[in-house]
Amino acid sequence: MTEQQVRSDLDIEPGYRIGRAENPDEYRLEELVSSGGEGTLWQATSPQRNGGRYRWAVKILHAHNFVPGHNETPDNAMERWYRRSRDALNATVQVRQEVPGVEGAIDVFPGPRPHPHGEPGTGRTLYVVSRWIDGVDLTRWLTTQRSFEQVCWVAEQLARIVDGIAGSEVQLVHRDISPANVMISRDGTRLFLIDFTFTVPTRSGSVTVVNNSGYTAPEARNGCGTLASDRYSYGGVISFLLTGVRPSEHAAATDCYDRLVRDGFPADLARHVVLPLAESPADRPTSLRDWAAALAEFDGRRHSDDHHRELDVTVDGFHTTTVTTLTGLGVTRLRLGSGRPRVFVTDTEAPQAPVVIRSATDGGGRAVDFVIAQNESLWFRSGTSWREAGRAVAGAGLVALRGPEGTVTAAVVDPVSDQLSTIEVTGADAPVRRDGGPYARRVFDAAIDHAGGLVIAAADPADELVILTGDDSDRLHLANVRTAAICSNRWGEPVCYAMGRTSELTVFERRYGRWMSIDPIAAPTRFEQIACIGLRGSTVVAAAGPDGLWVTDVATKRVPEWHRLSGEPCHRVALTVGAAWRIQVAALVDGRIELATERFGDGWSMSSLTR
Image 1: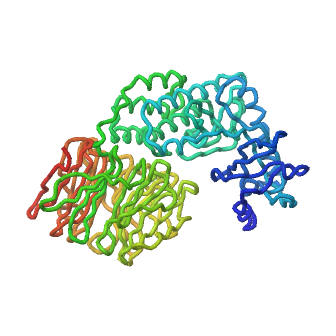
Image 2 (image 1 turned 90 degrees about the vertical axis):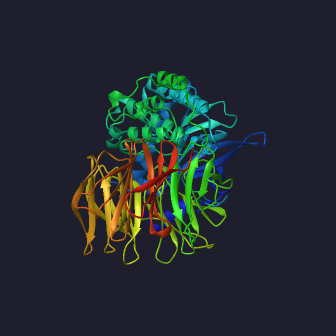
Image 3 (image 1 turned 30 degrees about the vertical axis):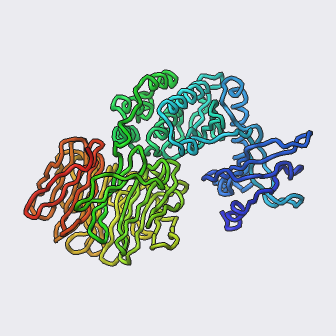
């Protein structure tokens, strides 16, 4: 794609006109609705005879879609997309009549690029026109707190549509079911499945690959989508509505189950929710309507609003420990100190529907909080006010740490590009966001090396462990990585601890500029999440898992011993250095907050911060 094509995709303004070559001003673009990897969606209008205007949804495909393939010209590529879109339109005409709630395109045409009224358009692009639905997609719908009953209503309505198109006379596979392609009317009484651009009949066999990260079934990522693949995508949508995060590309069922239980849902409900996310198509429900009816029979009540589901811990310039958490009430904080009441205070100014939170202390001793909300908006708090800092994938992790200059940097995965983005916060100045880093599926942890560089432990799109430094990516050849942590060792070099398929911690150290594997550490069980911190020539590793909260001092013994601080299920652990240089472990234990503090002699003292 040329630089001119990139600019032409961006330089479209409200009031511009589009249409076929013979009628280039047929539609007037009114408002940009959204922009994604495939194209931009606009609200457009056309004149009525009575002087009013019809409203339409118009998708303008990005220029990069028309990059010629092998033995193709640009016109051939445009024609290929046009034929595919026309085929999808024709296939959905009958289904629209059979299945209420199906909203496919009503027109597809190539035409001049958007242009001011009365001026000839230049170049060519492809337009897909659909009926305008006065409502919101599920991503926006979820920005307001929704009840379990409301989610069950969506599940029932969407199940009826997906089962309906599968059972129609032409038997279609939608292939792109996601929250962005499900609309709810403004009055909340009707649900629609939209964007049938990639729809094919089940008899089509292998087709062009569609990979909507988190919602495309494993077998469909190779172009082998089936009716069962649509059921997987449906399950991903319901998982998103209940957890607020996009499903994981790998081990989606396991991750969804863990998150639901951590968020306070009953375990039997969690087991039912993950059934459509089964890796094998044969293990998924064949009737989504029956599955949705069974979902509505569960008791979807979570634990009370003070049930904690996320946390982080910081120590400010006065050596005061602050534990920041997420509950049903939003962001809450507890500042520990002599004479202070142990009460979590709700931050009423925090963003709505937060999903993940991370905190760090800047060079001035002030805590900086980062939050990703359910609508994938990223926010930060420095001082007393919250500010937005773009978008981030909620299910792809969030790390925050202080750099050598006293600034605080966060690392996330951008939801459009699936690439690493960093956000640097310096006092009251505007944050500096840098996009376009290496591709990543998830970020686990970050550290600062002896040269002051940011070193990030992450999973790449193939779910292998990678270390990201600037624009460089070092593959460590650990597949199916579940969790990882990184800190500095006694020589100031970064060391990474990670867990893959086995119940052992794989250890990597950077020596003389190269990463190498050293002796692994046997673990007592499989961990859900780990954290590490280097202090006094040693490294302490803390781990959370279904069998409890564990901690070990890596450097004190040849074979590290694990100490079990709690036997209850633990979902999240964070480390910091508190007063008198003692390490503190904050943990989320079965919805409660526990704090372990290193004793001066040996061992740990445990205290519960919640009742």
